[in-house]
Length: 255
Ligand code: PXL
Image (tube, rainbow, N blue to C red):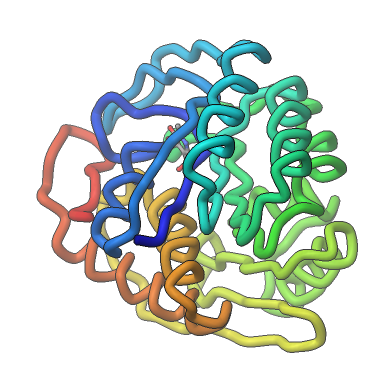
């Protein structure tokens, strides 16, 4: 059986973070594992408290997993501070992790910061260069590339800039753009747009987590990256359309 590891924060209400990742792996027939970077108290209405993992416990979790069940893919979500970023990067290098998908989580759907301010530079320098693909949304891309992204041309420039900084493929998610919500993949010299109709819904909790873990699951099952993304987007769209309508805020998806 193929295996995947999520390195991310928690969501006790089950919609985002490692909970979403594990459900997504399971739905794809991939054996899911999870190392916790932060315990997050949250629900569909928002985040109320965060407790970061210590260096010791994060390092020990990663060594425990890699030393026993080597994951065929690694999905990285929330990594709350520079120390957790460094520990994660060192472990991925030490264990020669493969198929690393990084969702550059910076804030919750409700805009609560999920990474220390200033740690984005450490993320860009230490962790992002290890990725096979990075999946920023527009606000995250703006932090990484240092300029505003308003048009599709800006998206191309931003994705190319982040690709050059990191050496990774970039899936720049266009959902925050006014008008179209097409996503852009830059892989080497190849550029591909993915278009899908915008779904009007408040059930968006965990969409970024779900997309990136679905990409990881499709990669380990042998899809080339562009196809892994196409399949993951199809899965995400269905999961949004079939959302169970739970909670009083941004509801979870049906994984
Ligand atoms: O979807 C971003 C995200 C990632 N990880 C955790 C989260 C969230 C959003 O709320 O809580 C733990």
